[in-house]
Length: 270
Ligand SMILES: [Ca+2]
Ligand SMILES: [Ca+2]
Ligand SMILES: [Ca+2]
Ligand SMILES: [Ca+2]
Image (cartoon, rainbow, N blue to C red; front, side):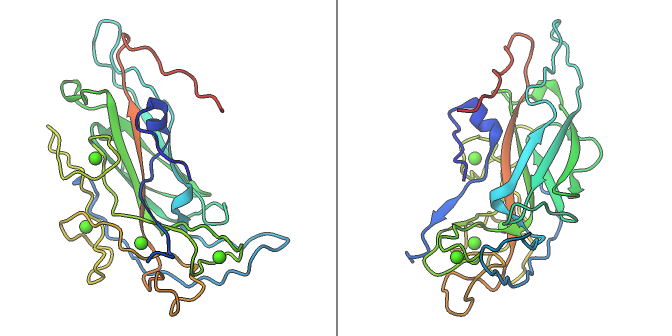
């Protein structure tokens, strides 16, 4: 998994997911208010075979990535006047076998600015987009980094150590907390709001299971279970959960700038 480096501006653009890593051996509000169905189906992995894998149709947290049509928009002209620019925000989503997912809804939340048409889109061949424009220049984030979060129903990722396409006892999984909008850019949930009264909380989950898919007015921490469709032994593995999906999310930051701020350097591979 990519480990986000929030000390590096490029790292802050690139990704996001975040999380609590658990060894299974150890035993907003900017949300749209959408209600997700957390029910899932059981997996039936058969291990690596020659020939095409069978798509699960479920987004894995491992491959849920936010991309921007312009990762460094200049929103003020040389006279210091605000210039409205549209940035298209894309999501890329695969399943556990790196096969694209279609027909799943993805929601977006932002720290600042406006989604011009919708804050949600539906995946087609692993991708969909929303359009965003900068907000009131008087309230641009002081650090010029605008936080975004994309979230959707999906499943947690695990390290398939024995290659049987299933989550087994002893394998590592990534236990996800509820989505949030990282206003502070510190990689953790803070119960704060900004001057525009946009808050970090995105209340879309109630992990106690009484009202799955609905909010509970608090930020839920990770539940301690693997939420996914590929448990090898649901009854025998204490880390398997009968709720086989959850709300995954990707956090990202977009830098906006004036002409006095130089463009970001091009990204290079190591
Ligand atoms: Ca396995
Ligand atoms: Ca935070
Ligand atoms: Ca909640
Ligand atoms: Ca979990």
